[in-house]
Length: 141
Figure 1 (tube, rainbow, N blue to C red):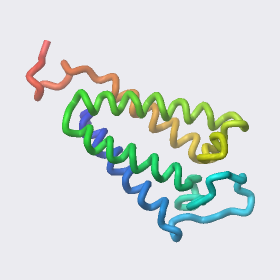
Figure 2 (cartoon, one colour):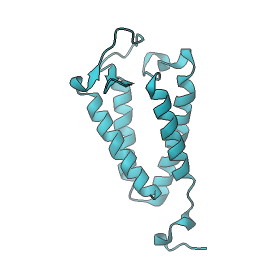
Figure 3 (cartoon, rainbow, N blue to C red):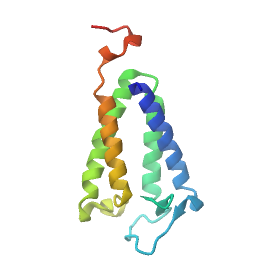
Figure 4 (spheres, one colour):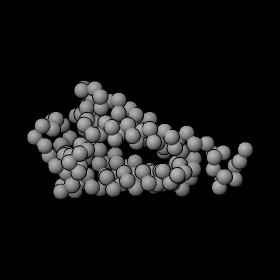
């Protein structure tokens, strides 16, 4: 799979997740969920991943960016690199109790931690692809 297709597929996935996060029937609320300041649309998406309106909005933004980045290898590579760094930071923050609610704005705990880690690793792989690996661009060594 090429970096451009990665950006497109991840972008579409983020768009879908962002939209689904706003649908009440897609979220469940557990009694032991940590309190959060931004509690609108707060719950477990598919009963697994903690989301709220902030994370839903960020998923939509990353989704739009990914779809737009698909149109250029350079943009897709930058997108993959930023996703790798941001989601690696979110993964690390999810391990520390003080950051699990990201200053009261967004949940970063539970299954979100390992999902963020997987996204970061895969994005880093695609971000590391060089232009010379893409003969369709006419740039061969």
